[in-house]
Image (cartoon, rainbow, N blue to C red; front, side):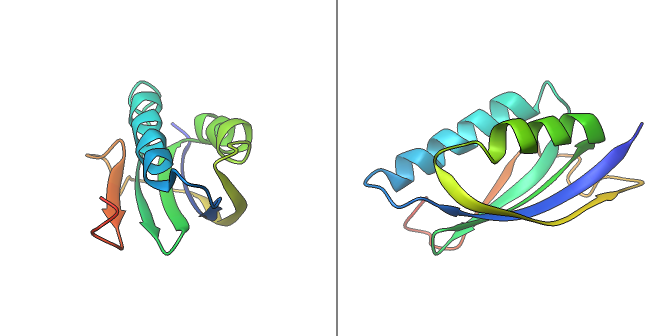
Length: 105
């Protein structure tokens, strides 16, 4: 298995429904990640996302380059690292969410 870890940051586009967009993103992530054996954690605070994802290289490349960077709800996607791994840090989480501001969630 060709496992990799991807860490990226992006900015949520300003809009009137930021909380709804965040909930939709989390719901879509859980729905997509589980059958594709993608695991990770999402942090959101001050209008920015930091997300770490783990899975097979081809699945993560597809997710990031075909879905995430094309998602109109956020912008300024920047990869921090994308490296091979021997074991997962997030094996129990198809998507764990951590909020900076408790009022958002």
